[in-house]
Image 1 (cartoon, rainbow, N blue to C red):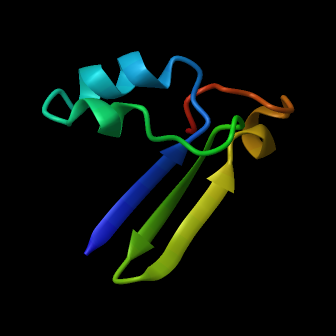
Image 2: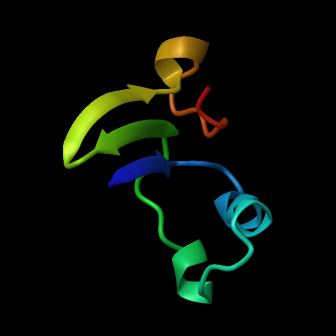
Length: 66
């Protein structure tokens, strides 16, 4: 099973509604932290993870992780 976790986005609720319109209302409010980051987990193992500030050099950025 594959998971892509995204956290810390500014205005994350509107973004999630646009990207995943079929979620339950409570699922749109699930978030962790304030700094944006992403992690890819495949079969229970972390394959990759990074914080956006490492690429943009802006501390506490809420930009979408690239």
